[in-house]
Amino acid sequence: MLHPYGVLLLEDPSTQSVAAAGHLSMVLADLVLLGSALALSFDVSIEQSLVKARLATAATLVAVQDLPLVMMSLGDPASGGHSYRLTAGHLVTVLVLYGVFSVGTRDQHAPRFNPMLGGLLLGLGVLAVRLGQILTDPAPFLTVGQWQDVLVLAAIAGVTVLVTVRLLRSPLPHWAAQRIACGVFVIFAARAWATLVEASSPPPVVMVGVVLCSSLVATTAIGLLGASLREHSSREASLVLRAAEAEATVQHDREVVHEMRAATAGIVAGVHLLASDQVPPGPRRLALKHMVDAEAARLGRTCTDDGPDQLAELAVDDVVEPLVIAQEALGHRVHWHPDGHRVLARPDALAEVLNVLLTNAHRHAHGHATTVVSQVTGDCVEIRVSDRGPGIEPGLEDRLFQWGARGSGSTGQGIGLQRAHRLMLELGGSLHHDPSGRGGGATFVVTLRNAGLDVDAGAALLMSSSESREPSVTTAAAAS
Image 1 (cartoon, rainbow, N blue to C red):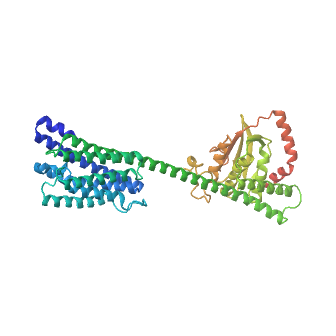
Image 2: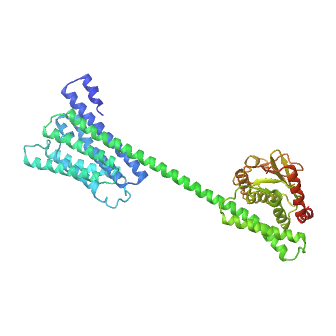
Image 3: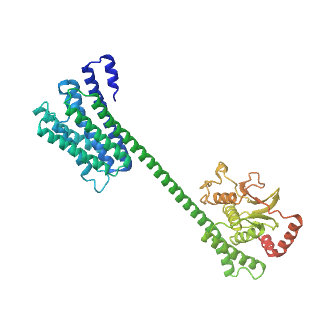
């Protein structure tokens, strides 16, 4: 803002050039004030802060009532004192400024009008008063030789102090209030000094004070805007996080409801068969009652949501058997025979994954039977669930395990496979679609860590499991 001094004085170091450089510096200072008001107005649109709106109004007011007089001084050096010396019109300026920072600020409500528009209207009003004063007295500058001028000068000083105090007590951040108050004091001191010495041209020292005031206001406005943008960004990030958490909660609830609906269907079908005496007493009826009890217990644990169980060694057959019986109760044929394999998993999670696969096979295989086979592959156990339906729709393979992914003719919600895939990852295993499955249809492979039984123990467990599950084998055979 002081660069006009360097440009003009290098060409012509005369008194006239010094005065012109001073006036140009004041023009730049007023333009900087308008820029500061614009930044504050943008800040207000973000924060809806009344005190910042009033600050933008004050900056606009000061620039609007001062800039035309400075431009007039550039054209007529004889009236140059209006741009840097105090007059009675400045008493009106500081009184209006005090009103801007005082009236209607107690409740700190949101701004009701554009702050720059308010500053423009107030600035034009003050400018009209000062121009009227110039018309009646072309040189209305205050002097210390007349007591009336001294009283006006003291009044200007007193109101300026009140404005400063009001700023320091405002809701502005303390650092910002101090900088703005310092700027107000500096510009008053600069103009007061020029008035006391009755300067006939803009003193460079006074110009430094004016430029310092504008610089303080501008840097403070930028600092406040930066702080508001950072706070706004932080709030936005917090809202995004809360929205993501809410979405995750809704997604989890929909997943639980999806599984509860599938499990309830098997329980209801089993209870209906038991209540209607369609299943005579014997191993088949016992297996059906065991399925209802096991699925009801799993459903109860799903509803309580006490957190996942720890990984444990479990028999695959213990998990598969109730699901096969439940599917049979629903009219879905499942080919399965106990294999005696043991894995490291959570029983409820593995049951939910397999139930999703069997339910999908029942829905999409159009009456065809589903096959469940488990086998040891290296250090893992693979459980393959195969159907003879139409298979996976072309173009769906890449997003098969994404939320909401489903075929064009599917009546599902695209929830089950996504949840099943995630549960398998949590178990340290995997779930994938095997496109090379034989016989057409879809084949899904569940892979889990082998529990690490030795051969003898595995054989003994297989015999024990086969004997204890003879009714289940019968059921599976009947279902096939």
